[in-house]
Image (cartoon, rainbow, N blue to C red; front, side, top):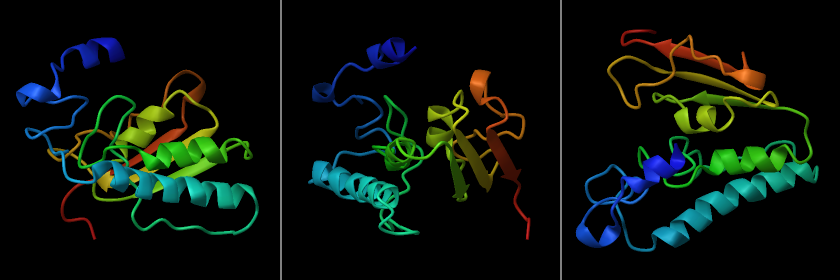
Length: 160
C-alpha cells in the first residue's frame, strides 16, 4: 500500500507533490523547514526521554502535536508526527501509553500508527462529519491486537 501510494507522486521538480508536501497541498514547502522539523520533533523526543529517565512527571511541548502526519504522507500542516515518535520512545520503558487528543480535528495520524497495537490506546475528541480529515468515526476501534484500543468521540457543531 505504501509503495503504491508513494508511486503516484512524480517529484518535486515539476511542481507536483512528494509525500503530501508541495504547493498544491496543505503542507507547503517553506524556508528552514528542516530546522523547524528538528525543533518540534526533537522537543517531543526530549520530553519522552525526560519522562523515561524519571527526571520529570510532566513535560509539555507547546510547538508539537502535529497529529495528522502519516508514515509516508504529510497532511494538515503536519509534516512529521512528533507524537508517534514520542510514544515509540515511551514504549521503550512503559508497558502501555494512553494518548488523549483534544483538538477540533481527529488525531488520524497517531490513531493510524497504533491501530493494530495493544500497547497504545488512542482517545480522540473531535469535530466529525464534513470536516477535515473526515476520520474518527465512533465505530473505528482498532484491528487485530489493537482491537478496542482506539476510542473516538466524534462531535457535531453546536455541542456545548
